[in-house]
Length: 483
Ligand code: SIN
Image (cartoon, rainbow, N blue to C red; front, side, top):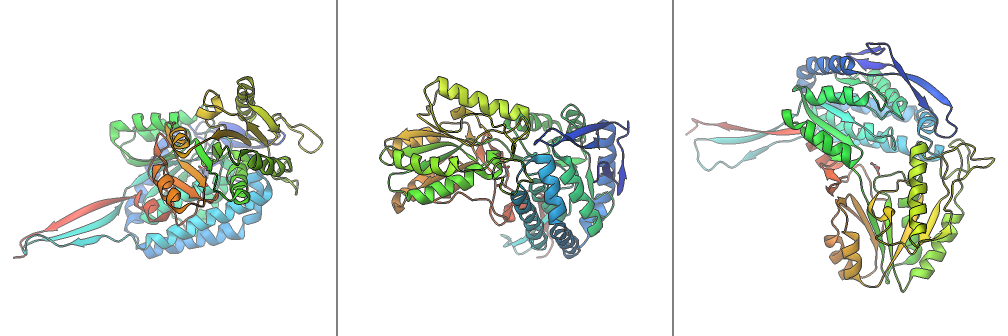
């Protein structure tokens, strides 16, 4: 297990030799002591990345592609140990962790292949004496700050396009899950990423502001890519303003999931199960508010309750586990607060609605998959992401009413709806104020597709060719004197 920082091609302890603890959310046992970053470590990382930038940027894209392909192959070789590591520090069931590693390798492959197509353009000039040429150039040193819910995939989705574009990287993984990120960086080293091109500094919650603060203040850092909460995204936008860094912010969501009266109810239940219970509901694109037309409400709730009630809750290494522990005690407290608030305001628990502690799920962080009916706008869970396995169902009577409710949020990451009416499909898809829309589909994320939000869910896109563009500048050359 790699537990130290990787800076300038060297695994090294923190400058002040401090460490912080990483604990298994299943039972709170100690997984490892990891180097605790501070401002001095962060500065060393910028020095290394700035030094390595000119040579990496100048390498032919094909060479960068081959190194990334090697990284992909090593990640695929190590699926099992990497999945075990994710499960230990993050808690998701092993089968899901294996899926996350495949998903991560897919991002590395996608950007390896996309990086060789970072083409510019020749523009038809308005006069014969000039030529207009557009080049795509690496942004420079970039800092990526990643969350705990997908400890491998978010690292891959940010680092791969940055490296493919010719940028050098500073990474700060989430305090709860640094070990997977450190293991991926170790594989990148083995793949031949040169010293200084990729640097990683881990830090606890308390020390993170020192590390990220140093990067925000340093004019050599030209871009920040962050996935996490909206309040932190706003702080990054504010604090990077002094040096006007380019930003990609993938922030909180409050996804609506609408089941119209003409929907295929079985498909809608399956779509909701896939979207809601992935990673125990700890996903930014998880449906947070489920609107069901009154004509199909009771049938939908019965079908859903049967599926949710059968979900198995337990630790990641239990082969039957479908829902693991939540990431920490604060997460379970929040879920409990949302459910209690909803019940106090008139919601009815159909399934779940309580913590789980039994022979299989022994630790304190398990919450039962839950279905609530009679949800209303007055409840906390309608305005705030629950980030857990809770499905609140709101009843609606017509399309205009549900669209108004669905968009009544400052967030705009993902939205989903089920309908078989083609005119409604186009109407609702365009009316939803979100960056991504699942139409009769609950699994929307893919390497080839642009992932990102609107409104206070942030800006910038990950995946697809737009995901590469986030790490490139557009440089215009005007050659004169030709006429
Ligand atoms: C996220 O929750 O931020 C990412 C989820 C995904 O890639 O589907």
